[in-house]
Image (cartoon, rainbow, N blue to C red):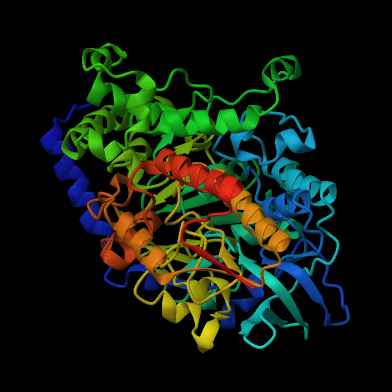
Length: 620
């Protein structure tokens, strides 16, 4: 098939036109939460609810969230000798995102060697380069068992309040199950992808068939299981999927194999590149698994995602290819360019990307991106047999405007005769009726609607967590963060002693491998808490001056290319509403992930040598 090659101006004009179709004035408010009349859709379908007596005790450390954040922090605290540790989670077990996301085809899209934390400590070898959801969940359970984190854990439990007690200098925590206990330290690790949301479609509550969110997959209805057994109960069902983001890309091929008829409702197509997954050879793994190997691999990924020229690419995947293309456009493909300037490759990497010239980097990004997106669009035309469907699946935006997807199964699914793409031309589904969905005035009658509509990424703190922290003097954390995030290192908050927020913003902010952020924050928490416990300190708290200085440093970062308001709307760019100062505070270190990790490692080393954790005050 002949394809028309567009020049750069035409492509950018096409990007702008496609973006304009999708802009909605309500921004994040266009979505609905799984609450109120939709509360039943939020129920846990995986673990039976077990009645228990309320707890009224004291623990040294309480962690809200039993995903990777809580598990890795708990592991590091246990290693540091802090045994009294409690996990609290609304889920029926550990795993966080991977507890909830058991939809068919779920798989990590960052290499398992760096995505699964504590591989070296637990002695586990991933089965594939990109492992499936059940294997990730099993690894989370392995960490919990290995470090004894099930002891004292509270599952199917939602925090109601966390209040600092001035007189006793502890946190008082209450829950929806009558628990009322105290903890010397608390941490919040509820993550950006745990509160499911629904699209705000008129009539969504009127549908009389079966419906569920992908994070609450109903295998009793579909048949099959998360391990890949066929969903045989869909053989006589007409199924609709709303959403073609990362989740849709993974579950749609599985549904296409089993449903009588599958309608995929698309507002914005994803960019879908080659996955190239493969098993991990145990003998090869043994050859690289020297002490400290996982940290080396994580650091190598950061180097390859940074602004200079790393010595090697251990990961060699779609993520590092993005950076490699930009780097080659900006700097040339060999270190010779840098050698002429008298710089070694490692020194080049150690310079923050902003010092390499923002205009130059952005120009290189645009050129490399257009080349890559043309490749992705050409691949669609080659794989998808129907020319009209292929055109509708082509993404017209920069690759990092939305989370890049990688799959070798997604595009071929549209060649199946039972699978129909319903493209809404950026408008979304118009209406849901008792029997189906309306697009372009046409009713598509279905038996089941599956919402692959994602999570509350851009909502405020209290909306995402369902509770608030009341700190010193009665100040609420939501008030403290009303004008934007305020932290030291993305972790400590002034006015909230002995409290930690494990999250990626104002830190490395590395959205392509969030576990690296978690592992690093866990190291900081364990070291700081162990220092406080050894010294007999009652409180740890950053000064407001240190917090303000850190925020100002974050604001010096140039606007991120992945959060540009020029992008088609999505959760990475505040649904196209633009990133004012409040949202710019959610960026990472101006030196990139590498800059942050180097800073915080030096900060911890200073604390280890002299007890001087700059910006923190330890009180007795």
